[in-house]
Length: 223
Length: 370
Image 1 (cartoon, rainbow over the protein chains, first blue to last red):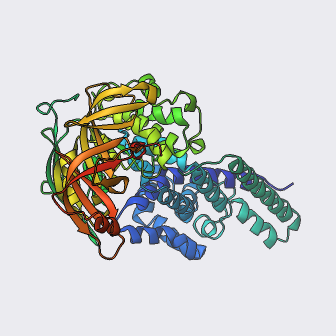
Image 2: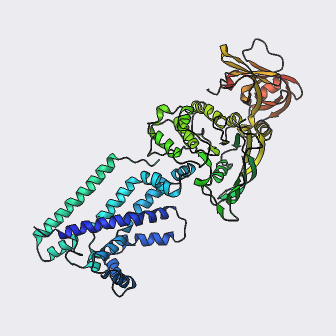
């Protein structure tokens, strides 16, 4: 029986990342869907970078940006007494950036697709912007919130390159399941590699299946 | 009249907005007494003006003020957002919330609404718009007319001080229209909220509005009381179909219950129309009469089924050379009726201006249920 620590570490990392990204990505996606600002293309490009860059490039820059010599890294060191690189906190920071498009893009296109009509209707009934967001926009785009959460979670579970660069392979801290599998294969421990891989495969499939099945029965109309 | 002219609030609009190929430029002090019609062809800027009033057009130049408050002033960078204006907006496409049932849509408005707005009770509105049976229905399951009733009720429940209606009947067929019209007609008096009603249908404006503003290519082309403005239009806008309608003020003199007819007096000449049940003897009505529903006789006709025979003087003939038709104006005392005749008939009857004629209008042409 292989050590299940990496599995729990992966699940914890993905859960924390998903929660934080929903909190951060939702206002960002809302802003992008409505703004006519000139910086919009810039922000959109930065958001989409993780889709095109090799994870090693992202990991490399994070390693430098979060290192103890960097302003962020040294600030973190002074504030918490711990380094950001080769730590679980560093993995969370890197994952948030790495999975950002998987939260922002589905939400942004959902917000754009409902258009101005329901927002104007709500405003004409004296609902303020925040009220409108929670009582009209969220119910109308619930399906996309589900999709964004699942995609973000799944993408973070599947992370390998960035984790390896920023976190290395420290059991209990940064050794997530994909790294553990890689290590088992490298040491020719195929039995454990099989177990963890199959476990991850089944788990991912089960999560996706439950969500898709749920969304099928839960029709959310846009008008 | 529920609101007298002195106490009625004034909406002052001096605003413009430019889109590719269209400019709205309006300067108007609008006294909000009872019901004002915004009338014009599609693309004349009616809806845009309504959106400026509601606060949906932040890019508009100029200023919008209501009853001494400034809602918008581009020079001072002032803008009161739509949700803080005491304006109710009924959209042509209703914009009901699909994630809520009918009751949920109504409660959405009732639980928010204009602070200090006129009290409008859920129960009253449900009764006034016959919504009891629809309350638990999903929005998708409603017919077009039902949706529009729910939309108007929802807007009323937000307790607006002004009610803007953007072509609420445009998407409905004729039958549905006549189902909704009585509800619209009763709005200003029943709920005491002044109404601005946008439409490109002359019959709707004639029936629902006391005053009319005519928009043409983004500018105000005329304003005044409904009868004057619409008849004036008729003389000067022959090329459009709206030119071929006459609008007539009349007074109810008798209800002929047995025949389901109402007799109306127009300065000593009488009309008979299908029963107007909601009107009592002595009340004023406005009729719109299409030129295509009017025929002409040079002698007093006898043995004829047509109930409305009006004495008049032929005022003018306009021949339309590239068609079979001519438009004839008949002065029936205080109003100009119009008749669309064939050029053949004009020639054979030897019609000319100044001769006495009889204008004939079938009662069925007043039946809005057709």
